[in-house]
Image 1 (cartoon, one colour):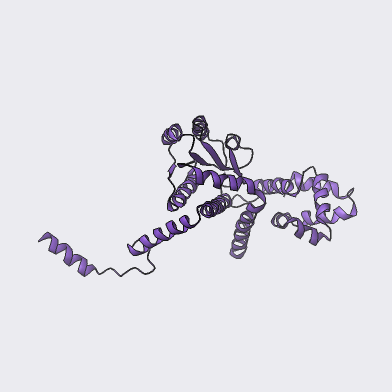
Image 2 (cartoon, helix red, strand yellow; image 1 turned 180 degrees about the horizontal axis):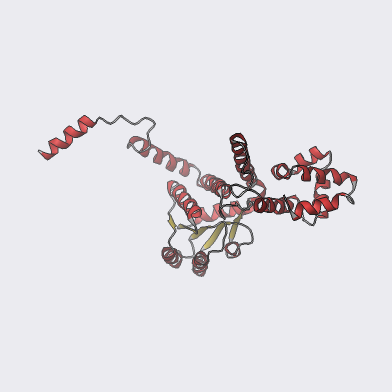
Length: 303
C-alpha cells in the first residue's frame, strides 16, 4: 500500500532515537492495529511510554496521536478496498465478519475521546430548556438520525419535530423563536440548504446544536458542536461507521436529557411503554390470527 504517512515513517526510521524506532516499526508492521489501539496499548507493545508515543507523532508532523491516526486512517481508506476500508477483495467470510465488527467497535469506542463533556452537557441543558426542538438533516442517513432523535425526545414528553424537506426546514427556522432549539445533523456538514435553514434559525434567536465533524461549515454556524470524525468510507461519504457513531452520540444525549428531567422522564417513558404494551402495538407475544373468525365477522357485517 502506497501511503505518504507510511513513507514518511520509513524515511524517519534510520534517524529516529532508539526509543521511538520501536514505535515506528510497529506502525509499519500493522498500521490497522495501531488505529485500533489506545496510547497505552501502543506504548506497552513498543516497550515504551505514552510521552514517547506523543513525541514520535510530533516528529512525524502531527500534534498528537489522534491527529496522526486520522491522517493514517484517511490514507488507508483511500488506498484500500473499494468495498470497505478494512476489507480486501480476497478476504474470507471469517475475515470480513471480524474486520467489519472490529471497525464498528473501534469507531464507537472512539466517541469517548472525541465527544466533549462540556458540549454534551450544554446540548442537554439547551434541549431541556427549549420550548421546541426541531431536528434538521441533509441526506438519507442523517434523516434517519433526525427522525430517531425526534422520536426519543417525543417519548420524553418534549415538543419536537423532524424536518427533511428544505421548504419545511425554512418554515420551521422562521418560526422557532428565541427559546427554541435546532438540532442539525450532517456528517459532511456542507449542504447549502441546511446551512441556510440554520442561519434563519439563528436570526430568530434559536440555539443551534450540530452533530457533525469539527471544522465543517455547519459546525462554524452552530452554538454547540457535537464534533465526531470517522475515516471516509470508500463507498459513501457517510458509511456504516459514521452511522453508528452518530447513533451513539444521540443515545448519550438522550440519557443526559432524561437525567435532567428526572422522575418526570421515568414516568413518561413508563407511561408510553404501558400504553403500547396494552394496546397490542408493542407486545412480547401477539395472539395468532384466526382467519375463520375474521371471515365470519366480516360476513356478518355484510349481512
